[in-house]
Image 1: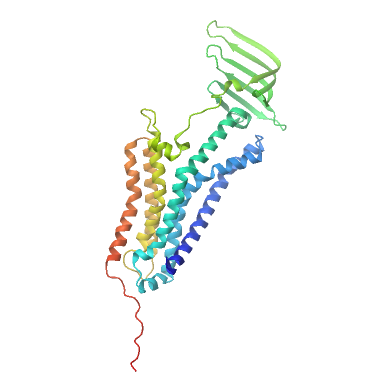
Image 2: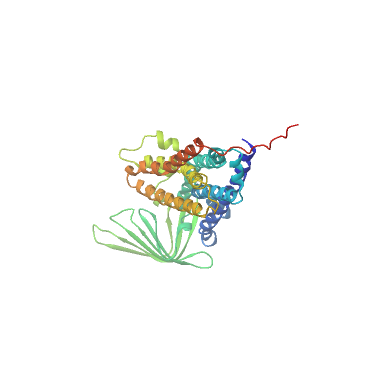
Length: 371
């Protein structure tokens, strides 16, 4: 790697890192603010909140990094061209491929990071996040309760809470459970609270009534109480196990573990994981094709920059559309690869075409006067 390549690469990587960190921090902060309510009003610990916030970070990096690659390369090469540094580099005899090498290395770095996320970090974060979400749902049901809404904690249990008092106790409870479909139970209480016991979470209620309707006999039994306790552990959807979703499976599991008959979700998820790292190379190729190839214009590169931005916008729109379509039918999967490989192949052909042509000669040394 010569000095010019290191010079351009250092600038591109610095800008890419700055843009990636800035954009990721902004999006992560906005999304993390939604979890603040879990601390303020739900009683979730600060450590658990920070852990949840860290677990959602990889999915933002996965989206932001390709855009950071595009912005860094577009900005770096546009600045080099506006300050006539590329003209000097071309005059020394550097080919288009040599000038594009730093951008390709930066794109390859983004590709490597995204590939590591697809293989391990993203599914590991999704798995840990959903495991914790499952545990909260089964052990800390009060965290999930929203005031003024019917909260479905399981297939057989729905809880309505009117509000919370300053002490965090629930007011205006309505609980409907259908564990026995022939004998549904409805419990109404003035107030209540959730407690954790050795046997699992329970809800303690005061001043209410318990109504049980027998569909076979048509009888309604009503029990008025001052204190009543309901064991929530009996209403868990599962005790210790839940099925892993495709976004929680590692790439090796998606590719080599046999899927249930007729289930194409794992196949689609595996292809999305393989395509996403390639977007970094595609976003790298677009500014190279627009700024480096073709003839140099002394009037400026504004049109080329705008063309690069437009092409990146079209590419991203098609990428989103094909990914949404692939989620419905596997026939859209080839279009994912076509969309991401087209900019890479076109840019490669343009660089080969320009490099195989007649390049400007190196600056000649002044003639030495004859003695």
